Length: 486
Image 1 (tube, helix red, strand yellow):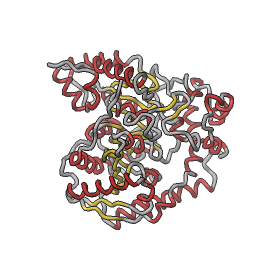
Image 2: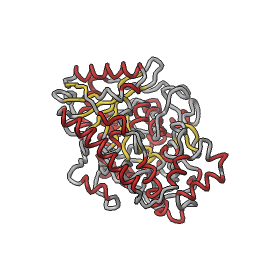
Image 3: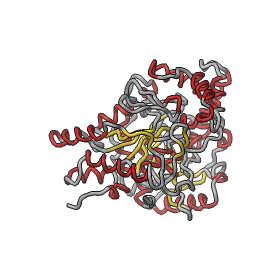
Image 4: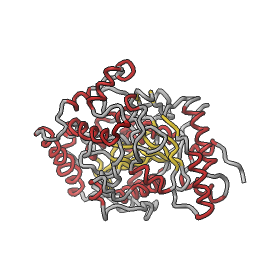
């Protein structure tokens, strides 16, 4: 058999890699070394994508142990031996730091694995490293560029390094997978932070229903909207990764609502005919006007493709769309959720509260405050007890406008299976009630900037969204890997 090289990894799927394992063409330990070679050539040399903050010093040993387990007992499942990169706000209780991209947290080791890290290890995945991100998951200040952190610097988009936006805040997760530096990655989203970088890097990204995946051990912004989710090169890979992460976790009350409503295998029922007979709503008003002309053209093409593949596409109105861009809830929730996380770290962290983070940044302003910390200052002004009438009313208003009068009404009135948006332009309205979305590559601009189509539905309807996205992907085959020069 022909020996595999690091170039073979540029577009390799999880299924491809498992085939290589079965054929004896490569081991997980060898695979880890090839991915590290790609990181050396493209992340720290060549285009210098700057997507990987830190590499797991034990990755090769873990992979070798999993190879031995495979030989003796067979694979645990589809992720056995597969390298994954985690966004650096997802805690790992090992020799890697969890910093959220902040210099204030650069030396912090978490006391334990997050749920996400636990589940990945149980599935046999190899945690290869931590991804750079927009600092504090893009809830630090008004004008911070997507993909910038004071600890890691600026992430670049491999489809146009320094030219195309990386999306935020899971920018390093997106860039690393697009460039073939890992088989897949896990990002987090509060509002658009998976959907945005996934669409900007021609990836599949799933933002699950809040509560489908436990938030335990993730540096938070909002208990109302935060969730982790997979970022992959194909819908099938995303389905495989998502199934490994679901389940009830007593440490996260939100997962209680998912009991009986989650799956462990989201690949069931995937077929190229999955769009036949479904109804897709396209809310042009309030959303299309924010698109660039070439993005509008791509959406029109995507609509034509959906019809060709058997879907009925209808224009829908969401009158509340212009009223859902307020982030008052996040300002109030950030202080209480972050302080609770920092308390969990205990004496492992030099900062124990949001006030400490602000003070550290001010004391090291040249390195830490290149773009300011306006969101942090606003959050610190709140009580941290969530008792303010403004917060309580804002949360109720979000649910009313985004869910009851927004997505729920549009879906019911038009008997829809899903809504369709360009890129992450519908992220905000789905984020407020914690509804799921999936984005899929839809093409490229004349200067090679990726564009995606995003499908959104009601709570815990991930399986349906994955079926729709799979049929669209199989019927269009838009994705192509970036051309990277060493």
